[in-house]
Image (cartoon, rainbow, N blue to C red; front, side, top):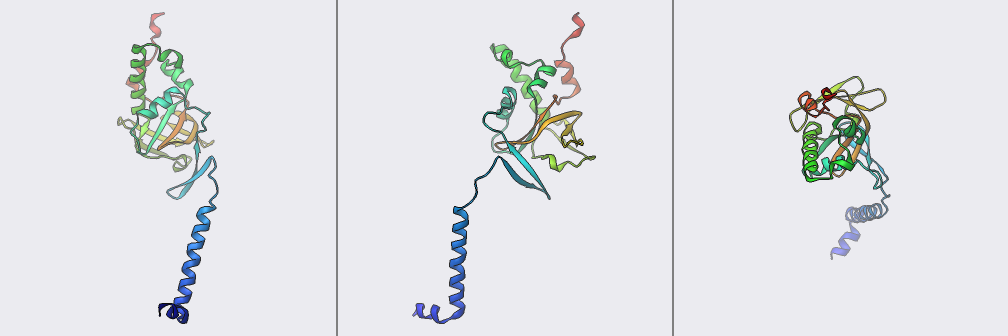
Length: 198
C-alpha cells in the first residue's frame, strides 16, 4: 500500500527522486576529491592566506624544532622562530657545540625556553591579518608585548626584527622564521658576548 502511495502521489515521488539524487551527488563528490597540494588556502577573518607546509627535506633547524616541541600539543600558537644564523649571530648557539655535554645542553635548553617565552603567542596570527602601514600588538606567553607590522615586501616586522619566511604550518603551530631574535633588553644584556675582556 505504501508503494502505491509513493508512486501515485507526485509530491512523494519527486521528494524520493530528489533525495536519491542528493545522496548520489554527495557520494560522487566525496569519492572524487582532488589531492591537496603543498599550498593550502585558509580563511582567516575576511581574508584568504596561503599556508606553506614544510616539506620533509626542509628544516626549521634544530633549535626551531626544539622550540616547537616545548609547546603544548593541540593548541593554536604562533611562533616567531629565529633562523639558524640568528641563533648563532645573536645568542652564540651553534648546533654542533650546543649538544656536546650535559652542561651545554642544559644551558641551551634554558636559553631556548626563554626565547620561546618571548616569541610564542597563544593564537594564530597569519601575515594577512597585518595590513601594510598598520601595527598590531599581542602579548607573548611571557607577557612581553610584540608589535607586529608588515613591510612593503609582505614580510612581518616584530619589534624591529624582520621575517625571512611567513605562514609556515607545523602541526597546530603557525611559524614565522625571523632574521633575528625577539627578546627583552634585560635578557639581551645577559646573553651578549662580553667584549670588555679585550
